[in-house]
Image (cartoon, rainbow, N blue to C red):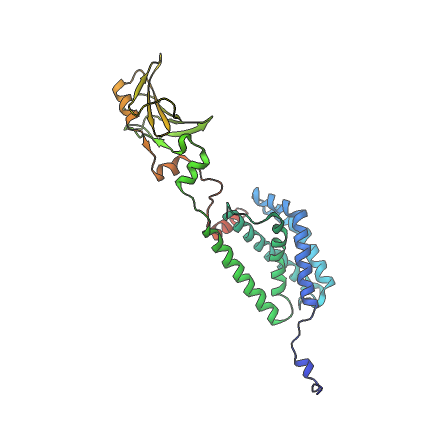
Length: 307
């Protein structure tokens, strides 16, 4: 039985030009990222809003052209003046989405998405904005729901990755024996750590309250274990008192000027112990694969650097 007159007007059908506009925005913005994304990224790196603005001029013009050739995809692209606003919204809000995606990726180390996914994912943020501005309530609702779900997933995903801890910092520093040993003699500031050539050196300086029994600038050198013993062993040296003590797979070597009392140096090397988690975090930087997992804070800090 044929449909009653006018019934076809009541059937809500998505015009093919709507998904066409969205798909073209996704494609051209993904490609634009490959050509001008480096300039925008550099603008954020050097904290220059002007460079970011210059980098987005080209994508804005491309988006405007897409709107010109797909005027039926959105109520805002039918006429030139509203089309300018549409292009500005897609460009600016799409950039916001791209920055959020980058914050998620940076916060998710060591997990990384495949390199081929970068351009399609960056283009998707612009396409979602275009979809939320397109003809059709269903299209706009679906785009809004997908955006909310993507943001929630992006905030949650990094929390599943290993967080920063003392063990990851020690492993990244490649310390002798895979452990950080430390001594905190009275009368001295918290030590400074230097790691190179398979050894770790802790340098001490006297505190403001006055020097301790070890006199000026004692050092504690951590080396891969060799022939040391658990009991401190005195090693002859013309300039310094040198005591060596084996702790696990590490030789802790105390090097102190001969102005100091030899028993004080012996007590110094006997006080060497594994560093606490707080001490490790004071001495060693965060491992590059254990970054800050707070996506929203990273996202906000990225924009704050521009203004």
